[in-house]
Image (cartoon, rainbow, N blue to C red; front, side, top):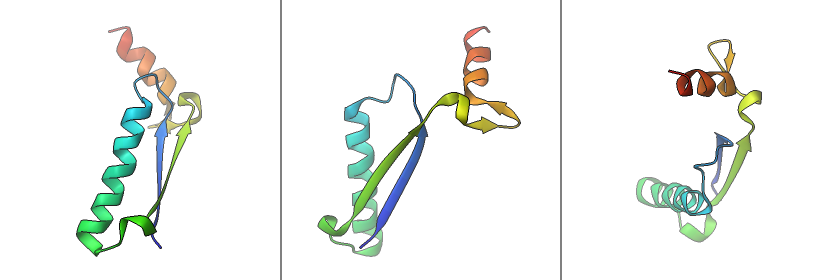
Length: 70
């Protein structure tokens, strides 16, 4: 019974349709690569606020703000 946890930053462009695609894609990957039955695959998506996720010592919120100001 495979379990996949996808962690992404919470952003406006992450729509319910895109989440559906992530769930379907992860399920299909386990089916295709490991031969797992899709009904046995569990997928969760955790959305983390951008100010709670850091890269290179800076929050993603700050990185996004820098990109917008360029």
